[in-house]
Length: 561
Image 1 (cartoon, helix red, strand yellow):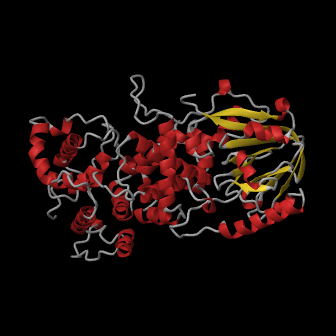
Image 2 (cartoon, one colour):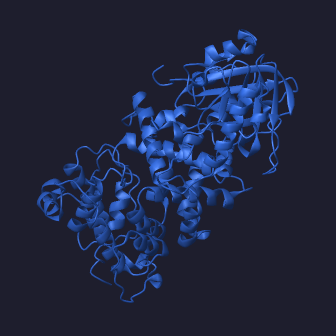
Image 3 (cartoon, helix red, strand yellow):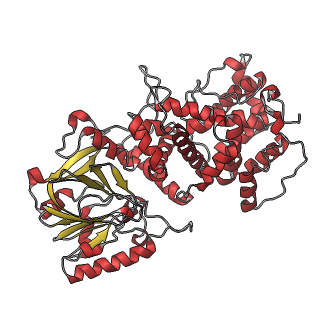
């Protein structure tokens, strides 16, 4: 077909979609390249796509000493020798059972293994890189020889631009990306997340499969289209496409019984057979329709998740003789150690599936309960302070159950002195468990008039609400950070944090998304709610209620503690 056909088995390729029209790629501006990649400008011309990949990869900033094609020619004979390339053992940092062939011929299939071994020789710091076989197999389609493919992959691995993330090369980076994906699903795919919680015993393990969907299960025509855009726009594209896959899975399988005992296997099967229901163009269209966090915000979230893993000593993949399954670091709530007068273990696990993943590594720790510590607000504060985040659970005398995930230490209230002090971040949310389960996102104090503690605090609340009304509107400017990110965790200036909690010696106010707000009296016996029906949501609980039991839970280190 062309000079880039050496490793392709054209009998397995759909040549009807290939165009032989001569095209050139002359643009260099990012916005134009971005538009062309999304439109699939080079997708139907094998030679043009090869030239596009070469151009994009050659522009990746790399370390000064990066192995090139000549290095490959020098080392490949020494490393491979006379062994049969199709049966070469692979290094431990890749999954030998997950090496896609992508319509490669026999020479191409063997070349994948040879290139992996040579990369292992030149990059001794790589400890975990499950996406590598897929990237190599794809790039072989658009390479003149093995050495050229080797050089292109090396450039991607040796990228030294801190703002340009390409291929995860350590277990820490991979695991934190899985946690970040779980956070994004929780935020942007709530219907799919609700389904995962309902049908999976370990929803976090399901989300840890996200890179396998893209670099292992997705058919060649789809992964190539994803790669077109990925080389231009970077890692964020992968998150978008994985979120879109999950959305389509829920839509296509809605109301249908699972095809296997494992939703994890069902999603893999769906992705493998995605051509039956979704075209590559429709997949990308769905992916870019998601109004995702900015690249900067995702980068900060990834760093926070890496730090959480490092604090718990989870930096390398644990070997297991008994099971080849990847170590599951996301520990569910332990039934034998958990006892609450408000929620069951199952309900607590459901709540755990909603919280940011860096805290899902922890076990719940009971800090305060009215049954043991009484109904003193001061005692509530004293036992909750020093813990961040916390979980508030309330059971009313009418057997309603509601609560809130609170991202910030209650000690922050002291900044306001004797006034009603507002603080917190956009990771806060309120929820209801009884009579029906409902989670209210993007917590914002919208009804400060609930605070009847005197004119001065009320005026303070009004000013806070006014400032929130303007600052809570999402901006697409990359320089601004959304309140989804915690100011404390990311060391952001206070002006970038939003205010979602309020506390004084006389009351507590917790704002709620979709117009929900919760107010608790100082005696912790009575409470009120305020809500609007903007999104036809049911109220958090009764407008006025009596508290039967109130509990505050902290997050104990489940790995080291």
